[in-house]
Each structure stands twice: as C-alpha cells, then as structure tokens.
Image (tube, rainbow, N blue to C red; front, top):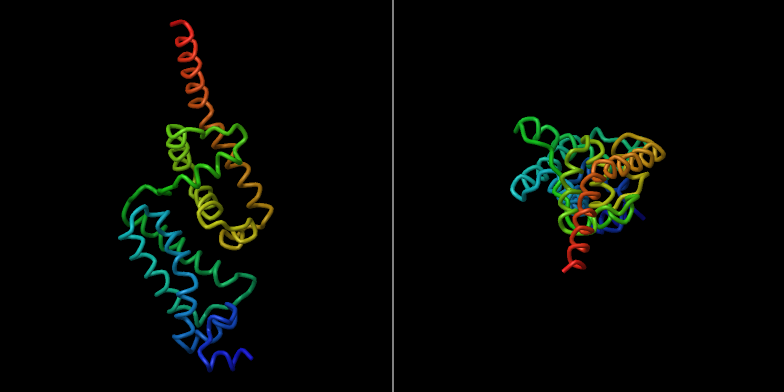
Length: 208
C-alpha cells in the first residue's frame, strides 16, 4: 500500500518512517518532510534567535543539512522530528558562538501565562512581572531555556522533549520542576517588593 501511495505521489498519507526511507532516493518525499516540519523548526529557531532574518537563514540551513545527511539517518529510537530538532539546536548553538551573541529566548505572552499557571507562587500576574519573568528565563542555563521553549512554544510532551535533549522522560520532568523552582526563587524578591508597593499604595489611598 505504501509503495502504491508513493507511486501516486500521496506522500502526505505516509508516516515519517516511510517518508524518510523514500527521501533517501526521492527528493519529492523529502519535500513532504520539509512541508510537514517547516513551521515547527522555524518557530523553534525564531525563538532562539529573536529575529526573522536569522531564523529564516538558519531554518534553511537545518533542512539543507538534513537533506545532505538523510542517507545516514537510522531510526534507532530517535524519531525523525527529534533528529531535526537536534540539528536545529546544533546550528543555532554554533550561530550564537560564532556571532558572540547572548543566548536569547524571545518568550511571548503565551509562555508567560503558561509559566504563571504552573509556578508555585503564581508570580507573573501583571505586565511588569511578566517582563521580569522573561528576564529570569534568560538567566537560566541553556538546557533549561531549551526545555521551556520546547514545552511552551512547541507544546511538546516530556517524552518528546527527552528524545530531543537526549534525556529520559523522568529526567525531563525533574529538570522542569527544578527549573520552575529556580524561577520562583529568582522572582521571589521582585514579587515581594511589588506586593509591598501595592500594600503601600492601598494604605496611602485609605489615609486620604
């Protein structure tokens, strides 16, 4: 059935494993893989670089490298999607090193709200606190930034993240909780100061 579908060009009905096998000899099959994962890889790269120009350039390099090495790819417990993300991670890491740039995740409001819902003390409730949250995330080690990016921007499960980061699902879960605790500890002084300001403002208002 898969060979019949391939002959008809219905690549979109094939799973990744079948497409990869075909893509080793058929560029049209690789084109389907490209279409399937372009938006996801671009989103990942964009949130690691923070601008569209570099994101577009590096995303193209990811797929060029994948195409040139697909003949060597073997599914040994590493799904094709995870393999692509590893390539993207390496290319972006090299870009940061070559450019001497600070590693950045351009977190958006969705991530801020997601972190707020899971963080122990719900620290990011206002725009000022959301900005402080983003700064705190940028101070995290790269692996923890990557974890938050994959979880909140890409919406991946712990198992999927583990495949990309080369960790077990349990290790990812543990790292995630340690990361949230680290963010809480980092943000706690700012949250307490903000609470004091609000309390002071309320008291001043009652005294008028």
